[in-house]
Length: 113
Image (cartoon, rainbow, N blue to C red; front, top):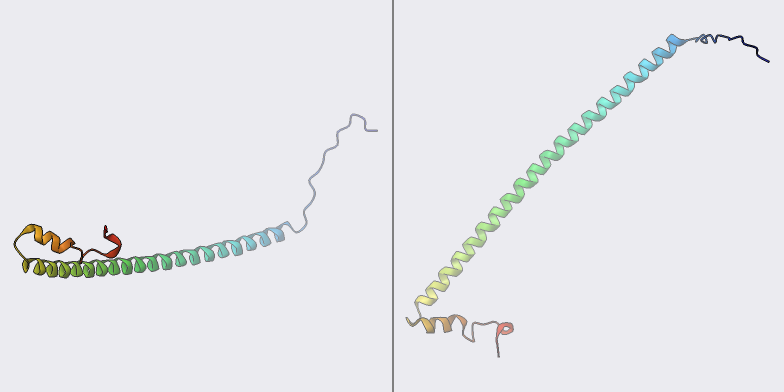
């Protein structure tokens, strides 16, 4: 039975505390080096992906511009051929319209009868 005496707990004596501190410091250095290495690799990968994305975007816009220019040229040629065809027909506007949308120029799936 413990009677009203208070015992003080003394801190335990740590043997090899300096050795543990050295190991901890060494582990921290190794860990920080690994983190720096991983960060460098991620930055490198990010730069590589960004450059690749820029190249792909430039290629896409170049192809889009080429496709648009080709379509414009085709439309101009078609319009010029249509204009020549219309200029060669009669001067009566109604006959020109019939020539454009007449039975021979309407696709079969668009014909009324």
